[in-house]
Length: 296
Image 1 (cartoon, rainbow, N blue to C red):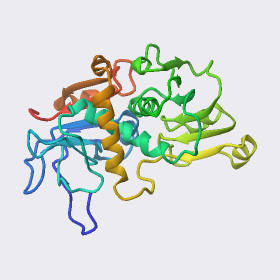
Image 2 (image 1 turned 30 degrees about the vertical axis):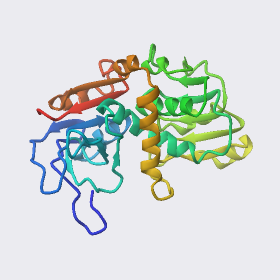
Image 3 (image 1 turned 180 degrees about the horizontal axis):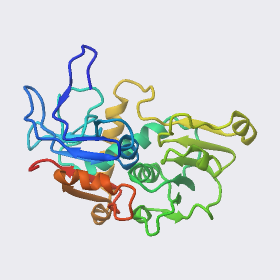
Image 4 (image 1 turned 45 degrees about the horizontal axis):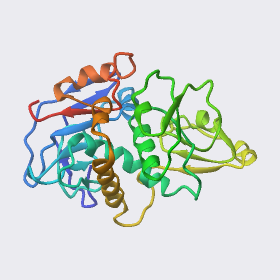
């Protein structure tokens, strides 16, 4: 990442991916004024796309802090990189927030900002397509907004997201339609097929380049389609405000017994092995996986 002045805002990425492989890079000490990256977060959909492409630094969510008493800084920089605390897009967790909830809140922040752009519609009975970390952040944000019934469409049996408050998991071939449908997988067409006439379709997952919904299909369905990219235009301060709201709510209301089934922390040196099984049944069941770089 580079700022407007062209100065690099991070250094020492720990993972590079491309052509189907991930490789570990040596640790580099943080430069003057930078914060060491202590944890980073695996985002399976993004990582799979990057893994299949050209060689590049991997990751976009790394945690560090200025001292032990400070809240975690969550910065949009590669896995394990040291970073400038003032880098664009960084947010600060409330002091005392554990790394697992700081990471989970970052996914909830995406849903919070996206749902703020959805027209007024009942959130109860919302249908969420997917069961990964973006989906988990979304269902928790829907619950925070008052939803007591949330349907999750997933092909994974016994998906951990099913333990979220108010959630019922449904396989894709039997799922009915919804008036508020939020895709978290990047497959807009599949989500569109589940959207009731006159409904709202939210695109929280990132579609592949070239994917399209037919204008005639949207027209006949009477749908409202909402792009929910986290970096869509927002008021100054909205990014941090949404993150603080979500993180504070998680710390105060989330059952601690759910953190284990939802969040796993593994040594950063295991990154290549994790990348190798992202599409395999042996991949971690937990939606949120943190790489620990403190001793790697």
